[in-house]
Length: 463
Image (cartoon, rainbow, N blue to C red):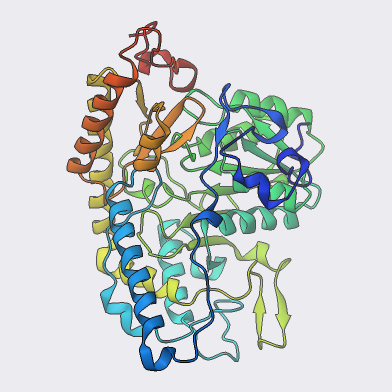
């Protein structure tokens, strides 16, 4: 069994801040990503904004207020520029929550169970449960049969879903494809779980043939499975029905496995894609989580986690201090996030989301075709808006467009805020830059057939 490390490995075995001054470091365990050294961003200590004590006469001179106002003005200008060139991460930046500004003066905290009020009265549970009911309808589970909460981020949803699986099967083994989000393996380390990494197809989808081999090698242990509804790098969707079929063929009855569905981005997009397989609690799954700050477009990190009521009692406990119960991970939770989600769900509804999903898929195909027409290797999975292509060799270009890279590939995640005009600007600049990067015949575009398939590779060997 291939186990994940019980504790994280620090760079070079050290934890000193000085280590992070390095611009290039090797990957954990000394591995390089496809032969590449991993490039880290700059140390923020070199650009941080110092907190200083007010001077005695600040109130009369107003110097401190003027200074802080100028800092915030420059920061806002930087945010506008960075938003203009944002393509590599799955955040919908097209939103307007001006109507909710009136609530920013309140410290809203939904600490504890969302379904049971606590003694702290400044909460938004009525909004939170309304949002949870909406997602319960989306994933086809009755109000009386589910439990869930609005998390502080997508990772927390995975941590909670896998924790529920571990509590249901204390001796279970966690199975996750190699292209699962790193938070899944973080959960395995935190909970000291045995974890088996399963190989993937070229598309990034879990390889169920390899999954079966590894299940049979550990047939005496219950299985806890992370199913990806859109992988981080390639946007691949694991075949949930085939995963369930593989479990059954390997001798795992439904009382011996738990499935958590990580739908961070595509978990909210897939229900609105025609012919897409359904993620539903009518199938033998244990939990589903999505991010609220990705496709929905919430301005602060948050997420939604829903599981079956029958599983939650092992985690839930009464807390006298709160006069409530708690089965969440973080305890205190941002009470503003449910209001933002409630506001967006009401404004857009199912039809609004369907329209945005179709726009994203249409624009993703447009980007893929433009890249291929320009002779650039590119791939787009059928149910995805993540376009994978050859990694630009200029790190300044990568940072300018905020591209997410892994090995020799990079990707653009086409979100509702990404327009055709922005995609044209990106492709035009990339084509112009490539003409200088590869003007010397000694330097050629990389072959990424192993990452995206030979049919999608435009290198000298495959074009």
